[in-house]
Amino acid sequence: MPDSFFKPVSGFDLPRFAGVPTFMRLPNVPVDHPRFDDVDIGLIGVPWDSGTTNRPGPRHGPRQVRDASTMIRAQHPVFGTRPFEIKNIADLGDVGPNPADIHDSMDRITKFYDTVIAAGIKPLTVGGDHLVSLPVLRAVAKKGPVGMVHFDSHTDLFNSYFNGTKYTHGTPFRRAVEENLLDPKRVVQIGIRGTQYDSEDVDFAMSVGIRIIRIEEFFKRDLSDLMQEVREIVGDQETYVSYDIDFVDPTFAPGTGTPEVGGPNSFQALQVVRELKGLNIVGSDMVEVSPPFDATGNTAFLGASIMFELLCQMVNN
Ligand code: MN
Ligand code: MN
Image (cartoon, rainbow, N blue to C red; front, side, top):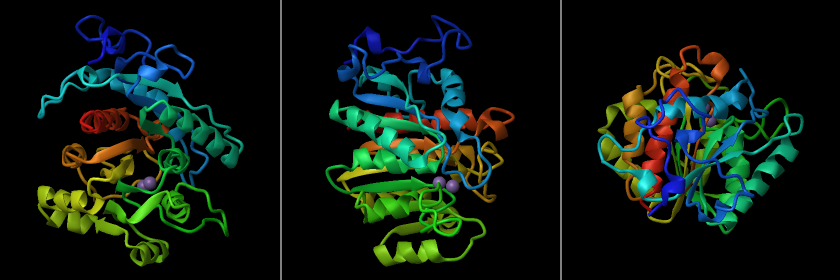
């Protein structure tokens, strides 16, 4: 049971537009803070988008999501879960990347997450573009491959971009399978759609046993039936949840670099996470929120709302 230190500031005590914004108005607990080892779940910003192949901007995501997340209240509307009364949750701050060097940035990110994992803290990350997930998984899956539930309109399974560049936000999970960070037979990708370069990514998925649920199947099937299959694929072993905001239709989430039309609405965006009940979640992320394309701020607010859903799943294990 968390002590008062880990309580978020309530909107009853201080209006939501006031104060220094941290994720969900939680205490800021950097690695050298005396309470760092007491944290159970850490909300972490990774303001880095050097893997972006198209429109940039997710480096500004964590700051914008922190602001939008001041709207998040204490209790889940359906389950009644009060996550801040179950686990010690804190904003661990940002990992400082090197925007001029992809590999140095990834090393810095993995090093930070090694410290987080060593302290027994489960990370909930805000990107950043989707390449962020690779250095995070290098820390989370250090002991062995994990399963993954991946919401996205893209597979992010391509081998390379621009004649041989292997580290972009279109390649992280290809690398993660190669590096034995993911068990491909326990990976499921949901929401895949849009025009394609070719079928190289899907061919790879088929060859290693990754389950792809394209958007046509998503809309055709009953959601709880579909998500039951998802839970069966990842089973009760360690599982990572990666959520690219471009999973959601650009009507609801326009603030992202590679939007694809014909996607889920904002209700379905929350509902899919509510159906992850009972999984053994070792970490999760919310990536690709790009404030420069988010004129209304709704994308960042949806991202913050999805984070709260992820948190409500993570406090249960
Ligand atoms: Mn992605
Ligand atoms: Mn995507």
